[in-house]
Image (cartoon, rainbow, N blue to C red):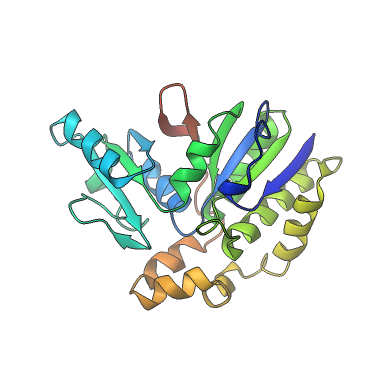
Length: 243
């Protein structure tokens, strides 16, 4: 098996994900929020690209069983039911409901992965479970980082490297691409204390500056969940695929 890391959704080459198992990573905050929502009993998360589409799909469903959630530039979108804080996706808000979700980077990365053989959602909070799930799929693995508006984000790159390291511990014969090896090397400096990313990551500092320090702290915890969300592109939903 071969493991690769792609630093941003925009860097995916045509056909690169075909036949592969993909782990989509957006640590701050979409991946973490999706894990939180499904852990809290959310029925499904529907990723969409634009806020207008999210609102239209939520309204078309009618009733209170479908919620619109998301952000732009880290801030909640006016008129939406929820933002993109993992602390918002609680049992009382989302249990049994479908969340139509749009974010600046994370949902775009999910949509970019639709051509893969299998797509899971990974973050620091479920890193161990996500690495095990990807290996169990028994295909080449691509860790797809959402990045930040087309640029590499440190927290996603570090999470990707930690995922590579977790997979390599379980399967020492894995072949790593240069990108996967580089991510793993950088991640080693954070393996014992990922909370350091709160200071080192520019996006983490931005979120803290706008009052989202609690989100940052929640997103930088390791292995607090054993749930791996799985994106079923055929039905356009992310569901709880493994616990």
